Image (cartoon, rainbow over all chains, first blue to last red; front, side):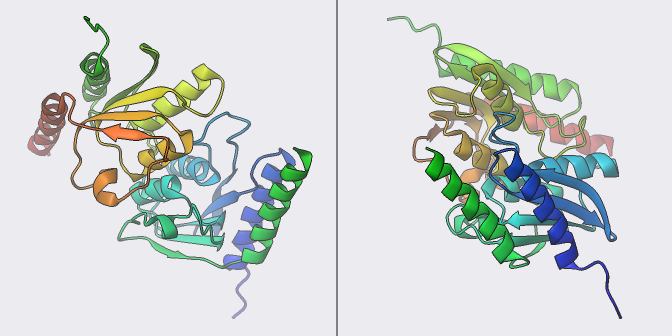
Length: 149
Length: 149
């Protein structure tokens, strides 16, 4: 059966959000929350614009999705995020009891896997979807930053 | 020398925030951020009111403090919080590079110490200030909740 909406499809939407962050000179990370093949939240990193370390893509996506659903638990939801969540975002996802997390590229230094952040028992996490695209965008951002300074 | 502003003084302010949460039927946890003996942010848990798992006292206090300071790093700041921060809040505090965290009571189940969340190398954390008061308020809240249901 043809499956028009798969992980790659939704990760592309998260990548579009990452590109929107890039265009604002923000660390390019994007996220979407999906329930029953419908995107209910889109967000990208806004830490510089908002002067706020908590304004990661995932945090905003969690808040927006809960707002859409009218309840704070993201049951039956999947979060797609271009880079592996950090401790803060994984901690927020723990509280949300989200069903599934799909990330693009690993964050070997600050990611929740390396940091040992605990996920909720109800949550499954997997990575590697469009990892190359997510990683390339991030690297390009940091190389350009270095060359400017 | 008499020291009018000590950890107990500021933790009492955080406890007043926790009581404000209690009065709103929120899990009673409060926080303040202090720089040079001045409170620059006050917040209490609002997860139920806002339908948002990210609305912990610490998260709001971090955002408010950064807003006050006009920069996202909480250098030379101390966060006073009535209960030990969770993974999410400790993860946010990591990004903020805050100088000091003082908590009241331990959270032996979901606290960042038990969960193994990493703090920033610049951050010192200590606990036990007005722990009994913070813990009693929290216990009272949950006992009342149980009796109502």
